[in-house]
Length: 107
Image 1 (cartoon, rainbow, N blue to C red):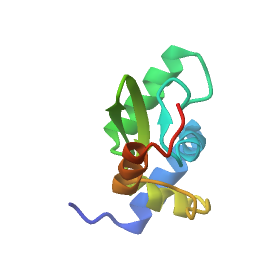
Image 2 (cartoon, one colour):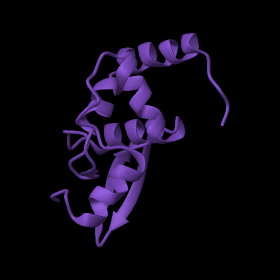
Image 3 (tube, helix red, strand yellow):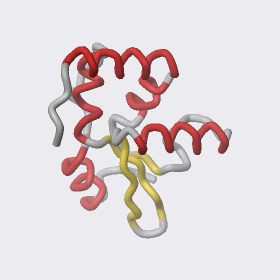
Image 4 (cartoon, rainbow, N blue to C red):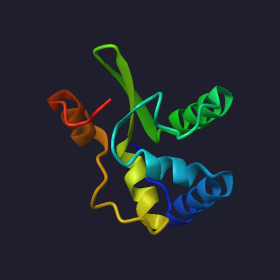
């Protein structure tokens, strides 16, 4: 993985705030079914936000049974810290997958 300068991460964090995607990342602090992950029924917004976050490597998807879940990738945690969010209650990466497989998330 490429090391990224702190200044670059701060720029990315500011971009996330300006586009409203920082709040979306925070909503995903626990794995959620795709249908409930974005707090809106506007499928156009959901598709656009999901694509931008996925392309940046901040979110991942996994299917558990018939339900598709969205969860945070490891790199999103550092950005949430830069934005001033407390990441103590955040499940990301492998811990999010374990939570999903254990059935600790309700659909």
